[in-house]
Structures are given as C-alpha cells and as structure tokens.
Length: 250
Image 1 (cartoon, rainbow, N blue to C red):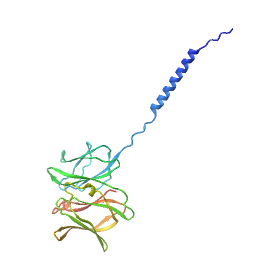
Image 2 (cartoon, rainbow, N blue to C red; image 1 turned 120 degrees about the vertical axis):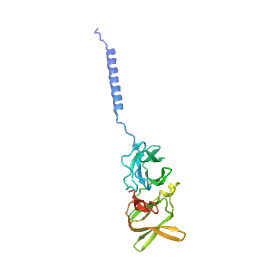
Image 3 (cartoon, rainbow, N blue to C red; image 1 turned 135 degrees about the vertical axis):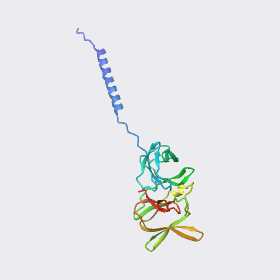
Image 4 (cartoon, one colour; image 1 turned 90 degrees about the vertical axis):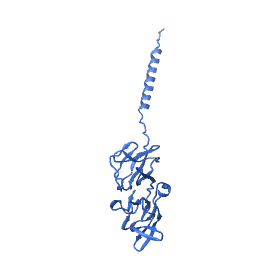
C-alpha cells in the first residue's frame, strides 16, 4: 500500500500568513483613507473709525496685530474673515501700546458685522458698537440704507432728501447713540429708491430748525447696502467738523 504523507501543518501556516497579509493590507488601506478636513467657519467684519481727535489706531484681533493702521474716517474695504470661535477679542491702541478699546464679541458662523468706533477720548477710552449687517440685495432700483448719529456734541438731527421736485424725510429726530446703543434698533436697513439725492441735515432748537449740512448730491447706487452716518464735532473745522459719511458694505 502506498503511504500518503499529509502536510497539514505547512498548509495551515500558509493560510495563516495569507490572512495576516490581508488584514495588514486592509488596515493600511483604512489608515491611508483621506481624512475629510473640518469645514472652516468664519465671520466677516468691517472696522469703521469715527472717533474725532483720536488719530490712527493699531488693531489687534485675537492677539494678532494687523499690519495696517486704522485711520479716522477710513474708507470702506472688504470684510475681514475671522475664524469662528466662542469669542473674538478686539483691541485698539493709540500711541503704541495705549489700549483705548478692549472688547469681546460672540460672532456667528457666516455672520457679517460692522464695528463702529466712536466718541471722544473719555478716561482714555472710546466706545464701540457692533452691528449685524444684512447684505441681501435690496432689489431692482433699490438701495438698502441705515443711519447712525455718531457726532458726540451735535443735537438730534432730521435728514430730508430731495430728488427733483420731490422730497421725503429720511431721518426724523435721531439723537447721538451715546454710551448704551440699542444694537437691535440700529442694525436694520431699509430700502429706498436708488438715485442721486440732495440731502439736508437739520438740527432743531425749540421750534427753530437749522440746516447744518446741505449736500448737493449723494449717489445711492442700485443694489448697494450702505450706512449713512454723521461724524465730527459741532464748531470744529476741516475733517473734524460735522460731516455726513456714506459707508458701503456691498
């Protein structure tokens, strides 16, 4: 009888090695799978310096100083992206390291905001107000607009706007926003017809109305979102005098 030798031990060893190789390959494949990075979360912010007699400011956001200084009545620029976190810390410094604004804000992911610096130096500080910006298109033939009274020593104002023979009162008896601004009331925009307007800014003492600014032409562009704000100081001259500024958000 022919004797048949079995090689079961060798066969089992071969199977075990094959299984180990397969497991190792699958493990490597799993470890090398591309990892989906977390979705970046950001808020957008614009900074507006309206505080007279303060000068250029150094800006520090979340511990990082910005290269460019912030100038009085600076021109509008695109929104800066801030990484979304529980709180953003904003500091503004004068004359090197003299902090005149130190504030914290909770911002929402994909939110858009404008931070207005205002008031005169009082106890070596100025004030800041953060407003929510709605950048939705106002529609065909329309401009979105809001108004801020940021002239510290100017009384409440009315603003009348004129287009041809038509006129409307755009702003009625709006006072300086002071130290406790109502963000919910100040943030919203309203929609008006686009076009070129003559604007008169008036103050009132008793029943006597005085025109403090008469601006021949202010262009409100279709589809834009703007903040109109009163700046400067009554009885001051030049750039420090009372003026009407138009800040464009989009």
